[in-house]
Length: 281
Image (cartoon, rainbow, N blue to C red; front, side, top):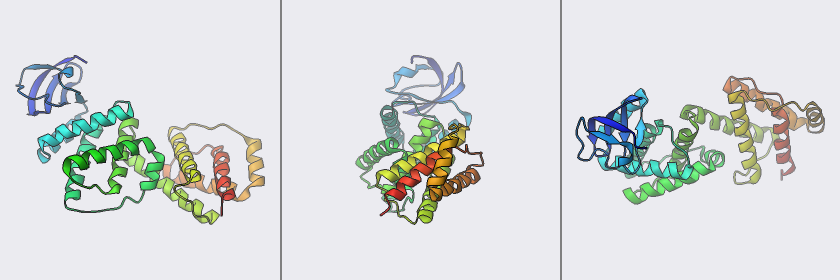
């Protein structure tokens, strides 16, 4: 990308505000991109190892307001982190991650240095739902620990994984939080109704949680699964406990997501629930 922009203001060695031919005013973030630059000089995007572009008005303002609270070399380090995430996820990141993750990691480092520990109650769900994001988040935590000489609590890996998932799917953190909390709630309903304790390291748990996530995603976009009336009748007759429980879960999803749920979801939920009953010890 060799597009030229005109520098309006150098914020530090790694961040400049520039005039862009399409997006008007933008924030450019890149290693050394502001070094020895002056207002009015032109610069091309490929002059830094990797340049990230902030064009959304709200994101630009939040990022610029955040800069005075973080060290300049931390911005350089965040550039390395975001580049690592982009390469490992093999896709570009939504620009909101620059504000959200920079802010989160800066404060998390301060918490770790003060030895302020906290738990992330949804760690298992996050790791199961977003395994690739979780793996990359572990790598990011390792990068931070090496640079800062800190020991991040395990819960931070989960939060960073959510930021990564948000940046590659364009879902808001609010929606993502709502979804995995809903999944956690439904797992509790299942355990109570079937009188089982599901091993969170088991294949059954992994399959169930992945299915619930896909169901929520389908409901979110209004996608229908398709009708299987004969199969539904058979499952209702053969496995009434699981079939009724599947409808209980559907009502929970409808209430929490405030969206209609395709009736065929009951079929697939019943099959997953019956698998849990079969493996009940």
